[in-house]
Each structure stands twice: as structure tokens, then as C-alpha cells.
Image (cartoon, rainbow, N blue to C red; front, side):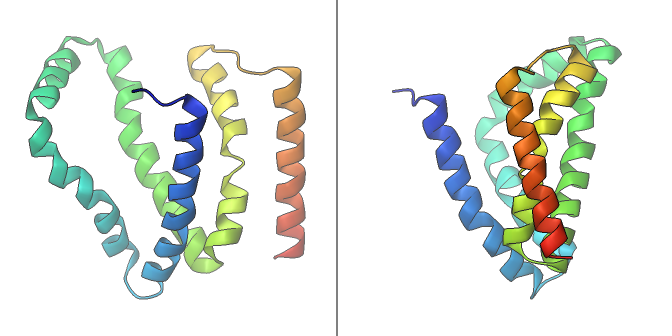
Length: 145
């Protein structure tokens, strides 16, 4: 059974809704490095169960030209930097405000999808939605310095 994309997207939102306050709680008690390692631990723990998939991906990786490897390698850097910046934001204010600002990321997804891969995701509704999102971001920052 395959769930519709919007059901899994809403489920992800629900999980992140639990995850962010847990991050806030953990950062008040532990170092940023420890919280980062705790959030990465499940990936490391399940990796051995997917050895075959990882081996096939390693083989596929080796066959890619460097121009195709670089964007994939960028995943490591953007994931780490984005996570650290988010956790710093949470630790300096709180999970609610940090997540309300961070939720503007889809606008940047559309921008970078175009800049990096020439994929056009902008429509009139996307532009209007982006303006509303950034209006909300400005309001939140203005009222919560």
C-alpha cells in the first residue's frame, strides 16, 4: 500500500512537530555536538540492515562523473550546516519561533531548484504563497527580536 504524498507530508510535519521541542529540550541539557550525534545515530544503527542497497549505491556512485557526484556530496555539507544553524536558532530562542522562520525554506527550494538544475517550480500561486510566507517571517522577527 502506498500512501498519497500529502499524507506522508502531513505525517512528516507531525513528526517534526514532536522533534523540534525535543531538540529544544535536549539542547538545554546537552551540547550541540551531542544532540547532533543523537539525531544521526539511528541512521548509523540501521545502515548494516541495508548493506545490499548501500553496496549497489556505492557501485552506482563510482560510475558517476564528478559533475554528478558534487551535488550529491553537497548533501553532507548542507545537511550538517542546516542542522547546526537550526539547532543554534532553537537554542538561542525556542523551537516554535525557530521553526516558524525555518518554514520559509520551500521558497528557497524553488529558487535553488531553478539555479542548480533549471527546474521551474514557480507559478502564480507559489509566488503569492512565498510573499505570504515572508510576510509572516517579517512579522515574527519584528515582534520577537
